[in-house]
Structures are given as C-alpha cells and as structure tokens.
Image (cartoon, rainbow, N blue to C red; front, top):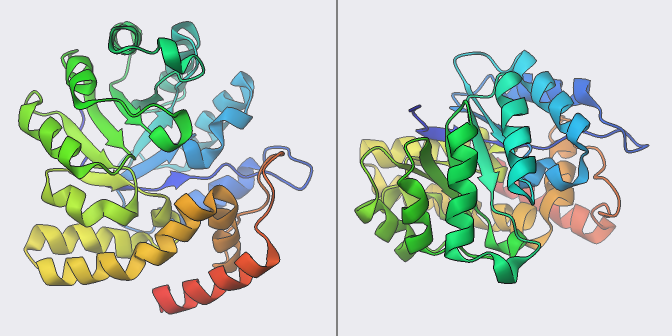
Length: 294
C-alpha cells in the first residue's frame, strides 16, 4: 500500500521536430514542476501519448523520468496494453525502472468483448504478477468503455489493487465506490474540471492535465478544501474550468503542449497524426492563460 493523496501532473512526453523522443526536454519540465508541492507524477498516461510509443520507447521514458523525479515524490507509470500479456510485461518494466505504482487503462479495442468478467480477470491477472501496486484507470472518452461501479468494486477486491483514477466525471458513481469499497482504496479525480466535487465525495487528490501548467492552483484547491475554506476552494475551481476544458476535452494534448510553450516550458510537437493547435485556437489559449493564471 502506498499513499496516493495529493496532486499529480500527467507529464507529456516530449518529442523533437522529427518526432523522436526529446527526453532531456521532458526532464527539464519535470525539474521545473518538482519545485511545487506535488505528490508525484504520472508518466505515460493519456497526456503522455502512450499509444504513440513503442515498447522500448516506453521503457526509455520510464527510466528518464525516474532519474529526475526525487524519491520523496511518487512516480506512477501508465502500463495498460491491449492484451494481458503486454500489460504484465510493461508493468514489470515500469517496476524495474523505479515506478512506485502502475496506472492501468483497460483494454478497449475489442470493446464488445470487454465484459465485467473479462475486465476483472485482466486486472487480477496483472495484479497477481505486478511487483508494484496497481491503480485502475477509467477513461471512457478515449476507450469508449465506462467501467461500472460494480466492475470497479469487483476489481478492487484484489489486495494489490489500491486505487482508481476516474476521468469519467460521474460523481454519483465515484461516491458509490467510496461508500462500498474496501478500506484504504483511494480514488483520484482524472480532471481538474471536477477536482473540488470529487474531493467532496471522497477522492484523495487528482491526476490532472492542468497541473502541468497551473500546479499551484490545483494544489491550492485541495489545500483549501482540506482546511475547510469551501467558498475559496469552489471559487478557485470555477475560475479554472474554462482553461481546463481547453487543454483537455476541447483540444487535448496539442493545447496542453502549446500552453507549456507559452509558459516557458517545453511543449513541442505531438506525434503524427496529431496536428498542432490551430492559429486561432492558439490565440484564444494565450488570452485564456493570461486571464486565468494572473
């Protein structure tokens, strides 16, 4: 068991203009973010363009990230594959690279066959062989599968499955899981757009794309909530909703990387076939960054 409480940026994977890994650039971003009171980082989540990388590239990213993430901060590694075999291999590789826990996105290509029984078996087989704890990742916008509370509760019975990152935003389902799950099972909000209400139903923190560009604001929402300053927490939450939507649901990784470039970090390009942010949207993002973060 590890303590997942706190805020985690899902760090983007850096590429150069030819599409090759730019790991030194990624390390620079991590070192910058390590100045904030974050709980740790997610490496190779959805914002890390994990599906764009080969197996060997993923291992290189795990290793490079751990080189600069201090031991006081957790490194969560995205290791979900389309087969159980691939997921086990990636989870073992992440553990060998120094990851503290594996965040596992469910298989989704054969979504019609991903029944409750198939998914529970998949997660339990991976957790059986994982040398590090497993965190379930529910991301219906990308997978087309929104795992039910009943399915997640069945998965959580495994002693090596310790938590859930839920990006679906269904707060009623999140609250149901909190009320029924085993003691110690920890839930992380998957978007800054609903961090405050997720905390209100029992989440312990969040893995938030926005924390790459507004780390202190994300930390402050949680700290204000924990201190009982609910109105301040709610107001700060509301002030970030539009910016969060632009770098997640509306324009995704290209907008997040463009925002990082605007804030003197390294965003750089996405891998093909993902296109860069359009010029009109770039101007809109620049204005929104100024109004939201100053």
